[in-house]
Image (tube, rainbow, N blue to C red; front, side, top):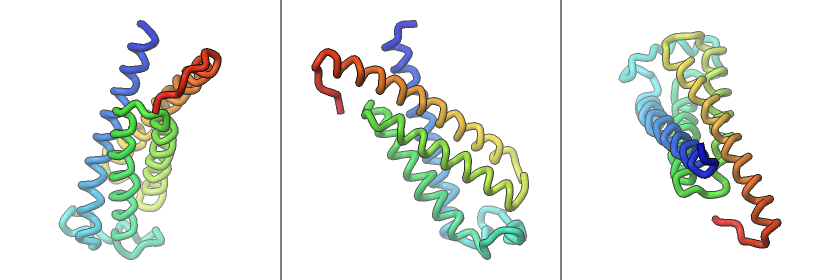
Length: 151
């Protein structure tokens, strides 16, 4: 496969993944922030007994803002093929992976979405590293030819 086509495929796949993660995290985060008791989302407060939280407001806010809005914005950056797309994907993929690991640490494995989003976070991280490597390679080539970096 042509390297340029491969890079576009990786970027497109990453962008779709980030938008999916972002939209679902916004929905989940909004549900937890709007009802910190977890009742509307059928998440019992008893799950938090071994965590530092008394309700779901703070975890929901982090889910909404960082995993949700952050991934939607990172997805837009990726679709625009901005040179920061890779580093944003590495950051948000790492954050999602750690968020899910921390969640499972405190409340235990409750449903299929926890390992699913852990895997999606790892996927985002890996694709972000591929994009970063691609940009770095392009940057070296651009510097050697005297061309300007695209933004």
